[in-house]
Length: 283
Ligand SMILES: Cc1cc2nc3c(=O)[nH]c(=O)nc-3n(C[C@H](O)[C@H](O)[C@H](O)COP(=O)(O)OP(=O)(O)OC[C@H]3O[C@@H](n4cnc5c(N)ncnc54)[C@H](O)[C@@H]3O)c2cc1C
Image (cartoon, rainbow, N blue to C red):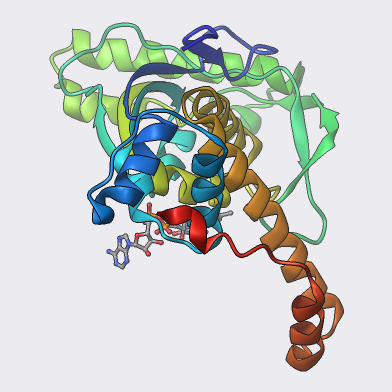
């Protein structure tokens, strides 16, 4: 790796959230080797023909040569991000367990918050950041009945108080003999968790296809972009061709939508596009 091994995910907020490169297997040449294995050929250089071959594999979804490469990372992310990440079954994960340790508990505490998108249920407004001042009565509705007046707090301060109180209650539970595996239910979703995850390159591209789009929650998208930055260094040709075809596919999809799903017109358009036949480069 040329660049540093760690990418901070939320530097505007803390120095905790990160993706750290641990290890990898293979390189662009290994993908070419795997593609040529059926011919009993092997070479370890990367020339123009090899680059075209990788492009051909990517374009035509000959995916298995990309599976010969693997990367392993360490992730430190809030629980709600880990939960989304772990839906990707093609990663192999091992996570720190709060059944075994009560040490080093940290929380993700942003100082600004995105507003909810009006029409898209799953989206937020990245350009509209707020930290509202809220009238809040601490602890319970009982205190309101007792005539307690709400005190005004910034939401970021309330979040900070909330996580501090949760940690206090967690430690009280442990100090009073309650087991770690039950006490941890108190700890909120913004608690950081740490895990290692290994994935092959084919599945990483699938993961990036899904998790680098604007439909994805920003905190999760940053994980995907960090992974992308690492694999750009480890497999530059493969990653470049992936990005190219992802873009082309997105454009084709857009054209399809614009044409009102008129397949005949779409096929006419595709046939007029110049395509280079690079079959000959495989041998
Ligand atoms: C923007 C976004 C929003 C989402 N919202 C929700 C949501 O609201 N609720 C929710 O529950 N999930 C949600 N998800 C998660 C989503 O449904 C997938 O679980 C997640 O993206 C993993 O995708 P995957 O199964 O393709 O990937 P992987 O689990 O990595 O699997 C890769 C591929 O392997 C194959 N595969 C793996 N396991 C199986 C299997 N058991 N059976 C058949 N084929 C398999 C499939 O072809 C799959 O595409 C969301 C994902 C995204 C990106």
